[in-house]
Image 1 (cartoon, rainbow, N blue to C red):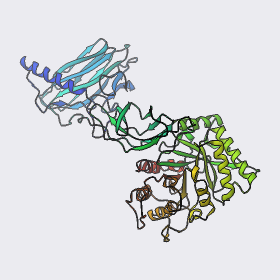
Image 2 (image 1 turned 90 degrees about the vertical axis):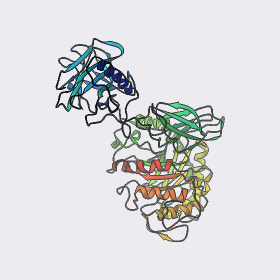
Image 3 (image 1 turned 60 degrees about the vertical axis):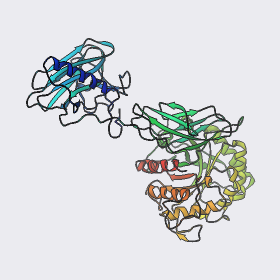
Image 4 (image 1 turned 180 degrees about the vertical axis):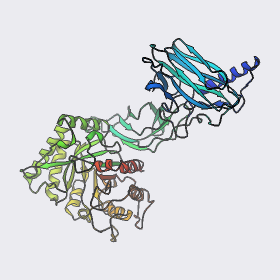
Length: 570
């Protein structure tokens, strides 16, 4: 088990200390002395096996930490004898010379021995032939005049069944090594996000917190349920209603502060909820259906921070407007069925998986009624076959707003209101409302999810204040996003698109810190550069990156930094 920050003493370990104090007091009546003083502590480290086998050494790999049964906390030692190995596990503890220590541990299962060697006086041990429930073994030893370290150990017996040990205590004067630090309440959960919604429920997920044994879920400030894992579905909600959700982490010590709140809205009663709802603030990532030197991922490997996963790319055919999807053989899939299973799993986890059309090398021509219909029909066929939640328009070789609008409206009519529609225009495509891309975005505003403009591979561009800005700065991100925010799109339909690493684009990479500063500037009015918008846009959708693969190549630095920041926006 992983140790919580600043360490942790298991809740049950103090019981051994109390027993030891009483035992030491009783021994003093018999003339052995060694009455426990205020400074006496449990000098064993990782006494409750909450940190796995840290500080312990087990013969021949015979020891392991298990989650059940345990006496207290979340872990216990399981020793399994085999052949000539009696599954001996030990650690060296720091002690004071000429001092008395009480050694105790709780055991269960097969034959179990507990002892101390190297005491400098008389080495001791005790044992039990096997217990169906937890039993405490206890003995005492006194150190020699020059003894500074003693080995405490436990083991089973040859040919016998496995034994369990928990809550080891070596109680006496501190030998200079200290003991396990006092337990700590867990930290505050991060990464809370909204997943699938129905007319009466909202699914939530969040990041695990080290040292937490459970979580409390709050709706509009009131605790409504608990969970042992990192997801939960809140039920019994009203249709077409927005709620605020928070999560806290708990353990035996206490409860953390509540997480940042996220908003979730149930779907209309009686309607088709479609796929998972896109969260108020979302992280979009493009997943590469090819190998170009970035880390090759199966869709299941896409980092959990991403809320919208754009599968790049669909392919065009000889029929104008028609698209198909060809799964790359370079990704290691056994077949299309495995890929479809990955899509279903991501959707079940609350993610939206959409098919992207275009890219640097791809082009689909939609310049007539026939091609618009061919596009809508073929895109809908892919959504039905693969389970895609929607479509992304990343056409970088020009579009016709009239027929693209017709195509998207036909597709929306087929797919329903749950369709996710995103766009990724280049900077030049969104300089003003008269461009074909901007006209298309405004024409489909009622069905548009988000426009993630590519703030990279660009020359200097005008901001909404008429000033010229160069890529690679907070000002470039904010001043250009401002054009869309003030040009007619809702803030929830605007996102910032950047490369995940220096290798993800020819130019325009900025650090995650710059991205987060730009998001804070636009939503809160903080961390701005020279350009500061005249107002804030708290409902700004979030950020996008090319690509999840380049993010993985760079150790997930981008999603690990930008994802939590996006999800914590107001």
